Amino acid sequence: MKLKTFAAALAATTIAGSAFAADLPSRKVAPAYIAPAPVFTWTGFYIGLNAGYGWSDNARFNHGLTNVTGTAGLIYGVPANQALGSALGTGSGASSGGFTGGGQVGFNYQMGSLVTGLEADIEYFRRSARIAGAGIDTTGNTLMVSNNVSASYLATVRGRLGFALDRALLYVTGGLAMSDLKYTSTMFTTLGTGFGTFQTSGTKLGWTVGAGVEYALTNNWTIKGEYLYTQFSGASGIGLLGPNAGGFSNFYVSSVGKQSNHIVRAGLNYKFGWASAAPVVAKY
Image 1: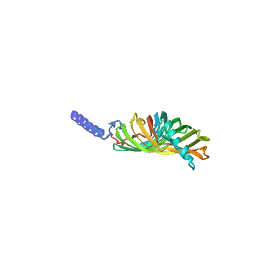
Image 2: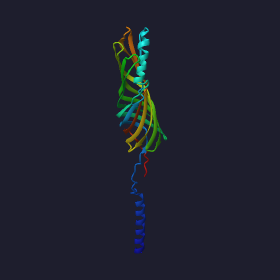
Image 3: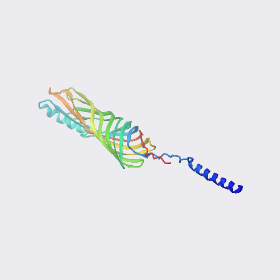
Image 4: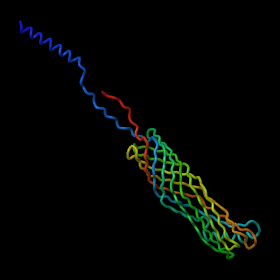
C-alpha cells in the first residue's frame, strides 16, 4: 500500500514539473543580424582633379593692306598683298601644346543602366601659336608681319550621358566652352611711316564634345580617362601704318581663324554618398 502511494505521488510530481517547465519563457537565441551589402549606384554629387596634355591647331592667319582713299591704293595696296602672300602664305597655320590640369564638380543620376549628369570644370591650359614672315613687294618695299594668338585657361559646362556596366561607366559629353583669347599682330613696311600694331583680347565662348570611361575603385573613389575637343571663333583687327609716300594713310588688316583645342586627360573623383543601403528586414 505504501509503495502504491509513493508511486502515485512521484507520477503527480513529474506531471506537475513538466507543466511548469512548459510555462517558462523560451531561452532560444535569435540569429545574429547580418547587414545586407549596399547597392552600388552612380547617383550623387562628386568633386575631383584632373591632369593631362592639350594642344591647339588651325590658328590660321590672313593679312591685307589698304588705304583711306585715292589711287595710291593701287600702288601701295595690291603689291603689298602680293608680298604678304609670298612671305606668309594666306591661310598659313601654327599649333602648340603642353600640360593641362584643373578640377571638376558634377552630379550623376542613374536610371537602370542609363546615367545622366552635368559637369563643370576649369583648366590651366596655356597655349600660344605664333607665325612671322617677311617679303618684298613688286615695287621693292619690305614687309614684315608677326602674329601671336594665346590663351591661359579653359572652362567647360557639359552634359553627360552614359551607360553603366556595374562599376564601369562609358559616356559621351558636350556643351559650352569658355577661354580667354589674346591676339597680337604687328606689321612693319617701308611704305611711308610703316609700323603698326594692334591687340585684341577677351573672353570667348565656344563649344565642346568628347567621350570617356570612368571606373569606381570603391564606393567613394572613381578614376576616369577622357578626351575633349573644343572650338572657338577667330579674331581680327586693323592697324594704322601711317601716311605713305602719296600722302594717304595706310592700314593693314589681319585676322586669325578658328581655334581648335584637343585635351587628353585622366581624373580622380570623390563621390558623396556612393552607396545606397538595401532595406533592413529584422529576422528572429
